[in-house]
Image (tube, rainbow, N blue to C red; front, side, top):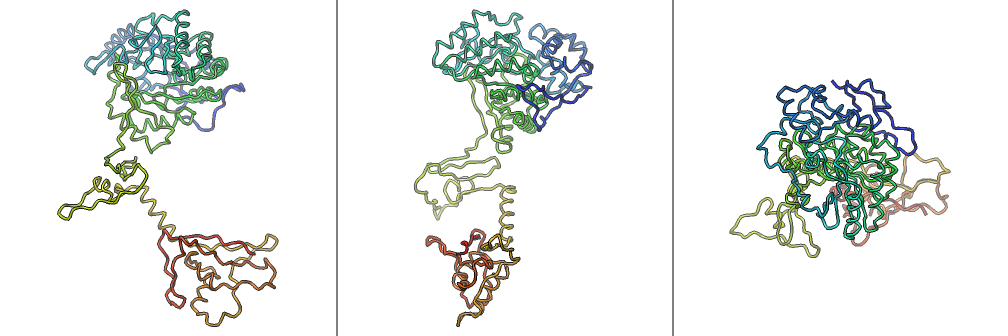
Length: 565
């Protein structure tokens, strides 16, 4: 079993971020093998890299494997590098063979299986779009630079496995570095440069500084993106203020990282990402859709919400590329659409990534999403929202189209066709919770008494408990008794609608005599008449004996009376 330890607070260095009050969804973990390592060493990225698991023999000491599996893993080791820092290995539940962290980092016999669909060495044909070694120029305004073949942890689904299958990897001596930067400088159409690898944060600090500063100094370059999984697999590297300073000082640096599962969002990862954000570098996330790792709506909801808590914006959800050895981790496209359907409208729009398939033959990223356009006609479209609610929408301005009339010899349109015809504007799924809440709100509003607001007395005088109307001691001759009774109902606080008594107040309230001091009592002033465009509701005649009828819900009105003269 893994031993869990408490999260350690961030350094007191003023240049680094402190932990926020909101906890990430995961916790700090440490495998029993390293339980006695001092915390100072555990937080040293150099110690983590020096003690990374790099061979099958080291691996089988920590995870049980059968002799047949060990033989297969030994063959895979000769084809694709293995490296797992102790920090990231500690996130694995060693008792679960299908653990989502294990599936990403630990070699599996399934990688050697055939017949799992196409498995290509260069599925995106990056080499064919490479004008010189280490440069991929596919989009008009973007180039990708492969600066190293080294990673802190080698993902089993990596698109660029071909880089590490050869132990020498891509040859990138300093003269090739200069050629790559010169290519960007000589192409003014390039606005966005992705510094990738491998993982560029595994570069020596001086070389990394040369890359980011040389690129940032090119006037036509707007953005320098660093593609790295270090915040996930080796966050201790970003505890180093010097590294943070090098990246921040370039001024144009954005960070693209790669969280795939909520368990990866640990306090250490949160600290690393906040160090970047607090230094002025936006951080976005690329996830890869992987079978058994994050191919479910609840897991993805937890992941994207956890990312927002640590100030990381979910950016892309990639369909897993058909690369050699990753067939067992790929899902259907329908699974990706199902996940986006479960995110859109259910979590913050900031948390919804764009689901893309990276096309074969260098076709680039193809965005996919559920279909929200249900049908269309010349005048209108029928759209669907995340609840399944269907509604008619007329996209252009101007005169509204009259509903079509069915021929007497035919039969009426139903459903979507009826929406397009304009006979209906909305189809609501049965049991829609939001519409049920609307009904509850309407019933509650209808039952809530409307209160007439009265002019307040000056603050120097004590308020009176019950505002009352000042009515002349003697009613005018001929004033019907029912009208006086209704006015008295308002004066004594009987709940009536303000709009329903508006005209009666105008006709029957008698102003206070001028001799009475101003502010001596709270006085209800006559309510101003509504504009001519929208006259007040029609009232029953003054002599009617029946009480006033409550108008429909949409005519409920609250009116603020003018202050006393």
